Image 1 (spheres, rainbow, N blue to C red):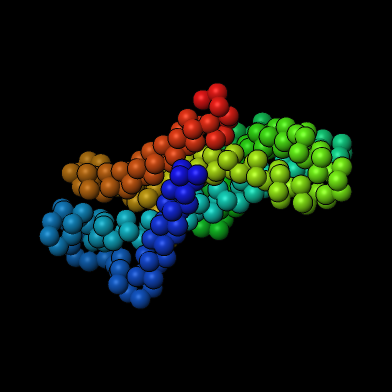
Image 2 (image 1 turned 90 degrees about the vertical axis):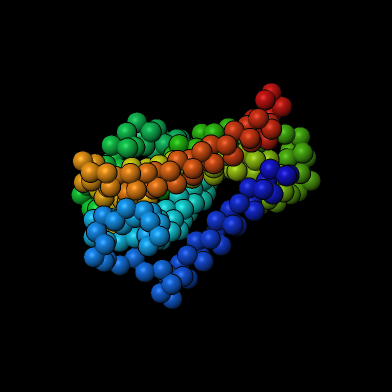
Length: 269
């Protein structure tokens, strides 16, 4: 319970941070505009220096944070929701729907996800919504079999069987028995999908395959590639790379704690 509470507080803090940054940008407190201070090193005027068109790197990092975090979190929520819905069809949808869903999952898992992302992104240069849809459509199938295995195991437990014998409907069993048993797994899948979505979106931004107007940590790292022959790469590349590494490290630690606590895979750990 303490781990779940801390995770919920962390997610709430991230949401409030994103809202605060968006509000500050909307009212003009954070202006990411060009200036004559081109490639200025870090100093009192610009704490993290400026880029090749005089934009403040620190302000860019702040404005890119809500876009990067929101993209990762919303992708994870929708991806896990679709995976659980598909797993429910596999377990409770009957032979035809179960076979159809499993074949769809097999087809999607055979196709290299990253190759498909690179191909589509190179063709359309996706913005926020298009990138979100790409990440969801190529990621929901990864967790279907895991969720289906847990649902199938829980559906055979005595409490669920007894509830069905006593006249409980499918919605009641799902709400009070199956979902409660699936909740620890959902937390672990959420953390895992946040990490994957952040890494994939940053990779596409770093390769310059997203909309140039979409400001993310990945796109900021991509703009630093032109300055690798100068000393400016240090304040252009390292700050967004450090924030991305911090995000990946934090989500990895959250996932490891859930596994070590036995909340997902049982007391074996």
